Image (cartoon, rainbow, N blue to C red; front, side):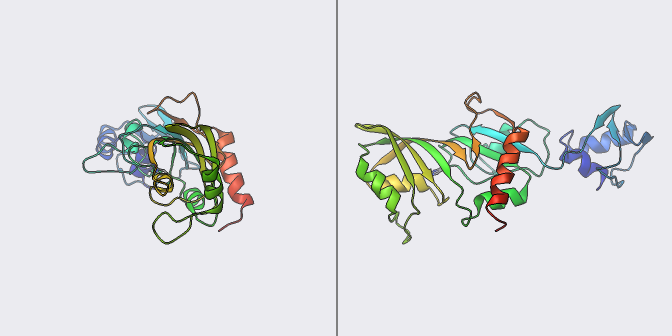
Length: 242
Ligand code: URA
């Protein structure tokens, strides 16, 4: 791996800064000053330091973000603030969000550079459960629970997969928990729209075994714990390799 890629993936600086540090002679590999940013390094065996501080290579990273409303789920966007903009800079360049939450949806979003894990979590064959808290305009009733369980059309000619619905409170506005195993566009909103109800507030609470940390403030992130990463990978291993 090139030295500049090593350092920029670890988020220690921009490519320009890294070039500048090399020119100034403050970057060393195994104790020797390296001035060429394209120098090949081995992330596993070489000791890379910037200004005397060792930079260890971390191959995969997993962040839990409590997404706020008002930011788009994208890596970059010409006009809008993205979920990646909520992580500190400089940051590694290969991170992406797993799946998509609408701009006005809050809650759990996994951000990683682990492509295979992302693919598995999003694969329709995996039926990974996602649970949302929703506040909707209208009275949600036990009949809706039955309908969610049976499946129904949300306007694109395909029935929804069986979904869970728990009523927390019902009135002019209702509060519910919805568990779906698909990830169709605006799915939860369209499920309620099929009954003439509007979703006023939507927040994702979990994705597979990963639960939104209740201590994580809206707009904040943290590294996933080793246990959380293990659980994500474990469930996927148990489910097969598709
Ligand atoms: N369903 C929606 O309608 N929106 C989301 O952001 C996620 C699920």
